[in-house]
Length: 442
Image (tube, rainbow, N blue to C red; front, side, top):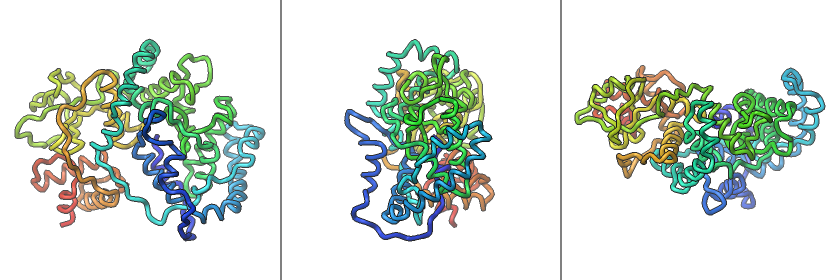
């Protein structure tokens, strides 16, 4: 959860270049080691954008040169960890807990070198959604919704968050708890903190993990998770655990590793305190009227109704509340009116594709139908480099004021939409394509 920015900002490049080795594990082998086979009866794992990005980065980190440097790095790591003691002490960690936790920690092989160039990885939103909202995941989610109906109702009453949303997040993050990761969280965080001398993100997370040990929230042996330091069924970073984790029964430390109810309650608690509005859906699929001019993207439900938009399933639109037009595949695909709750899901993971997948999976778990409008058969996804260039060109033209990060969220969509309107492009759907990029280059 929210790990791609941390990985990008915190891993420092070691300038030495190393040759490839035929004996070094392939990217496929690393994927298997980290997450298991993403098929078969044992696991039905779907890798979200941040996880995919991180795995490509980590694959590039793994080199024979890193192994050669491991011994020296181990000594440096110990020195680095000792420098963190004052911060841990100020956070309430005792010297005894600190020493026992970091004793003997060595760098995780491969996490000390940054690739010479970031791997390019693109996937279209329809492909992403297809993997996330699989038939197997829908079936498992529905089965759990039935088995846990009473406690799920309690969690929903406490948080105001629909239980199917919490189930969907658990489904995508860890396949409902069956794929939580087995990496030593302290070792991973220590390595990433040490490798990112210019950043404090993983140092902060390492201190948070030590606080968890100090409070007795988890044993050292159970402190396991992903290669990015995310833990348990909800894939919380330690700081998120300290802030949002909650025990369903309320009488013990939250167990997000083996207790599904604690995990679901913690996910719902995160969304609640991130601003979930129980009065609104996450989104509704809509049908646009003929000759729709795409002039506005952000209106009230009442205004959208006045413009002729209607729910695709024939039900009534919400009476009021802000809603944004979202065309994840452009004008040729499904159209949604997304609410602020969509943005709340994005606080769990900043990818639009992730938030859309969570919402659609939740709908299917709750018995609602899949999108009625078909997805386009072919969508040429822009590369990360293309997306950054798009953002730079939109900035130069005065349409975009966000980060040049290659992530096309609402701000980028609105900028593309404004550019299309200025150029008289129809439909001005806010969808970033090669054609839009070429027009910006002129």
